[in-house]
Amino acid sequence: MKHTILVIALSLYVHICYSQEVKIAILKYSGGGDWYSNPTSVPNLIEFCNKNLKTNISTDVPAVNIGSAELYSFPLVHLTGHGNIILNPDEVENLRKYLLSGGFIHISDNYGLNEYIRREMKKVFPGNDFIELPHNHPIYHQKYNFDSGLPKIHEHDDKNPQGFGIIYEGRLVCFYDYECDLGDGWEDIDVHNDSHEKRLEALKMGANIVQFVFEQ
Image 1 (spheres, rainbow, N blue to C red):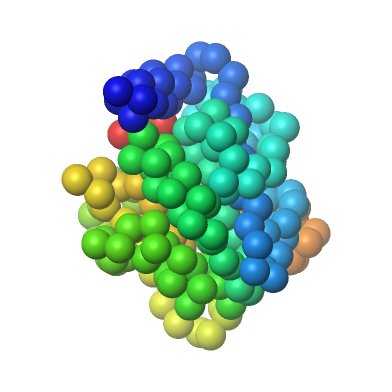
Image 2 (cartoon, rainbow, N blue to C red):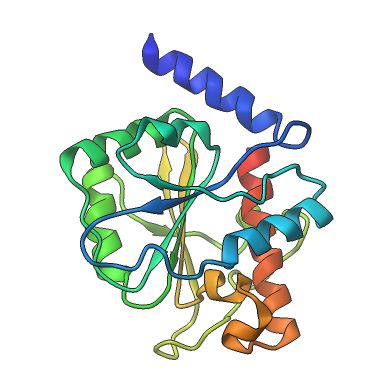
């Protein structure tokens, strides 16, 4: 019964994201990784979405512990960093319940996160692997079309960018950008000195993620 109520509550919450003010949160985690990196990225993405998607998202971006009951207040949460992440059993269970209740997590590898986030998300969904989403997936075709999938924002290891997802019972609950670094692309223009074109690509793809979450 409690799980059903959470599903209904989060579903209704997502559907009012264009009318009433909602919030997006950044996830705090243990293990040594810098969850706090890219401090300007999500606020900048929110400003872009409010202007171009006509969303009503608060520019106040709280940092929330993965194991906190506060998690259920947000239709979308963002996780990034460069290093290790460790989820304790309570955090694993809380994140799983949040995602099964209608929540969504966007993970952006800021370089060095990959092996750790894959290990920890396997704890959250033992029976579900990350799968690479095809370029015709709706997340690439919201307000903005990305016919070739994720844009390449930062070089990292000079690999092609890949967008992975975890799909549970037909619903995408997690989107993971790898070898792309959308979060860096959203930061203030003077932080990474990216070109205007690259930064705009990153913001547009981020807006697609937001729109997909709000409307799926």
